Amino acid sequence: MNDAGFDRPRSTAKVVRRALWVAVGVAVILLVVFASLSAANFTSIVQAKTSVYIVPRFTVTFAGIGSDGRVGPDGSVTVRVTAGVENPSSRGLHVYLVAFSGWIRDGPAEAGLNETRRLGDDRLTGTEGEMRFFRVFGTSSEPSLDPIPARGNQTFTFDFTMSAATDASRFAAVRNITDFAVSKGGDAATVPWNQFLYLVFTIDGVPEANSPSAPNYLRDIRRIEREIGVNIAS
Image 1 (tube, rainbow, N blue to C red):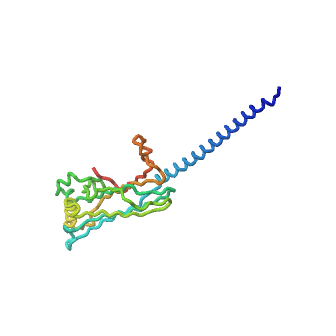
Image 2 (tube, one colour):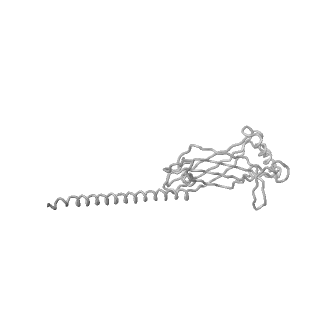
Image 3 (cartoon, rainbow, N blue to C red):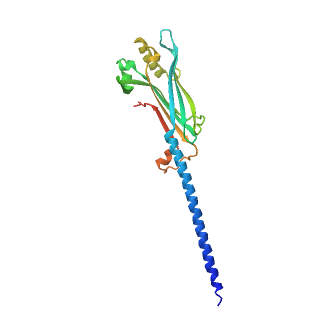
C-alpha cells in the first residue's frame, strides 16, 4: 500500500486550519480597529458635549424716548443677545434651536399698583427679597446659521424687538413699568431685566436616532444643550 495517499488529507487539514486561524486573526484585528475607532468617536462626542461653552452679552435699548424721559407710544424696546460660542472639541457644531425669554422688573406690581400683573408676574428671589418680573419676550426658532468649526468659535447676534405694532398689550405694560421708574427719579434704562437664553447644537458626524423605539441616550447623544441665565417662567 502506498502511504503517500494518506498524506494529502492531513496536509489539506493543516491548510484549512491555517486559513481559519488567519481569518480569526484578521477578524480580531478588525474588531480592535473598529473598537478603537468607536472609542475615539465616543471620546470626541463626550469632549464636545462637555467642553463647549457660551460667552453671552445682553444689551437693552429703548427707542422713542421723549424729552420727559418716558417711552413714547411709537417707541420700542430691543434686547440684543450676543452669544460667542467656543468649541474646543474636534467636532464641528451646528445651531439647531435658539430660545430666548426676557423679563423686566415690574415696579408698579411690586408697589401694589397693578393687581393683575402682581398676580400674574413671574417671581425671582434676590438680595432685596421676592421681586416680580413681567415677561416681555418668549420665543424660539430653528435658524439657519453658520457652523461652529472644530477647535474654533463663532459669534451670533440675535435682536428681539417689541413695539405697539408687534404686541400692543405687552408694550403698554413695558411703558407703564418704565413710566413708573421715571416717576421715581430713574429712567427706562435703569429698570433691571432678567434674561434666559437656551441653545441647542447638533454634533457633526453623529446620526440622529429616528426610530421611535430608540432609547433616550441615543436621541440625546447628538445634541448639546446650553442654558444661560435664570428661567423664572412659572
